[in-house]
Image (cartoon, rainbow, N blue to C red; front, side):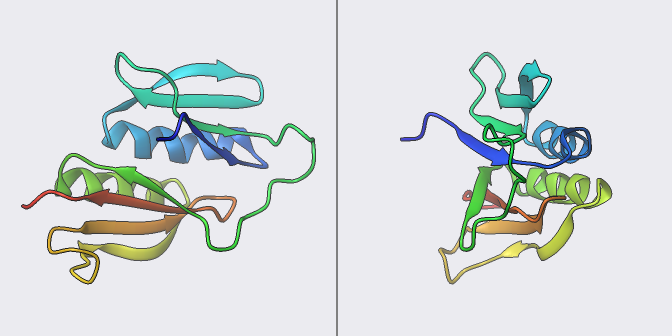
Length: 127
């Protein structure tokens, strides 16, 4: 349904350290690098997750109520992406675990990136 998602940042180098770790744990690769943006996506695919400085040259800000959900193939990948995000300075918003109120196999973790954007890393498969 979506072509891509762009997440604004005020410090691309710092944001890149967080997103490089998170996306690597999810099996995604960097497809595009520009002075003010970087794009990630599945190997052999196209960039679908962009991290960059806002085009209007204003400060990046957090959208209230917005969560970017990234799919993980396994629960171990959820754990690894969450740990990588925290190691790069992300903030905990919910440790990895089952969230059966969403559905019985919803295994997710939540964190905030360095600019305060909320990320969810989720595996929808059974253990």
